[in-house]
Image (cartoon, rainbow, N blue to C red; front, side):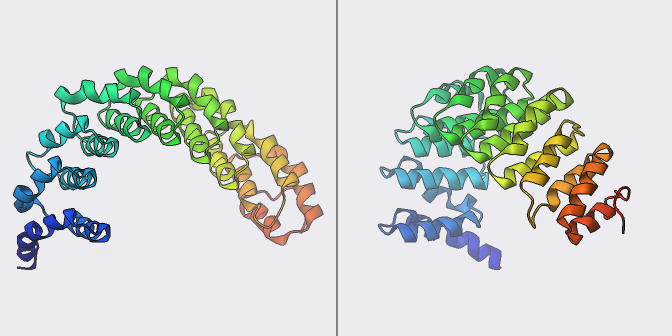
Length: 288
């Protein structure tokens, strides 16, 4: 009975998406996201053409998220919306299932003036596995908008496009740390062992969380080239949080580094690192 009450109430909540108070709109939006909307279609569908762009965007997002039967073609019409945020919301909502009649427009949106629209176009083509769009998406690795660059990296990783490897490598030095790390994952995913040396800049990244996750990428690839870089990191940046470097050396099975590593651990006299050294199976060269 409770669920039926929710269904019956949805048509009454939909008009609040047009309220003059934006907080009321947002509250109504959050409530409707959790409710079935099939019974509210007569109230919700007209909002797709409301004069207020904010109302149109909310209607597009709600209908797309609810997977309402018959709504996809109506959402597709909003790809040509005059408002960039509505266009972006429409492409995001259509991302799970392609509509061939609108695909050309989405590909054209890769060149749209709005970063939000370009980003959503990339994500839609990624979701649809449109590998033939890889060449156009490759050009967006140099986009001025970080959101677009990041979306392009994820799309090319999904497509496993080896042609993208040359364009991905410079992004290991991108100004945005999320993009630097995403580029590392993409190169490892697409290029594998053959391109592991390309990933070494991740270990010298200025963000420690990028260095940590980058070291995991290289450990997963069993990249011996990472061992001297990790040893240098341990020595040059030693502090109480350096245990992750030792862990990655253990993951890499860096037994050739044992004498140098044991000598360093004896000098710093950090019992926590020494204990970790033993737990990783590195018993040689370290007395006591």
